[in-house]
Image (cartoon, rainbow, N blue to C red; front, top):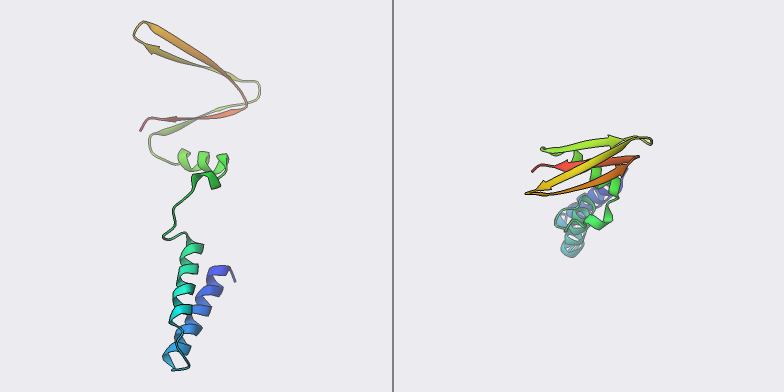
Length: 103
């Protein structure tokens, strides 16, 4: 049984005790609901810094208009950019996983 299941079971017990007239458990019920929401990430702000680069990369790679280029150890890619008459290029050596976001 995971933590959310345990909290949900606890909540059900508190609600039963409260409705059977065994005392006022309103505060405990509210606190348990808040704890369940925290565990599920409901009502909390996502902090991107808490995710690993791999988790962020994999999530972004699932999105529409995002494409991945994978370079193995011995591979190299050259990324070129042309603005007007100016041209820039950057060499990227593998291993690397590069995301291109065209959104």
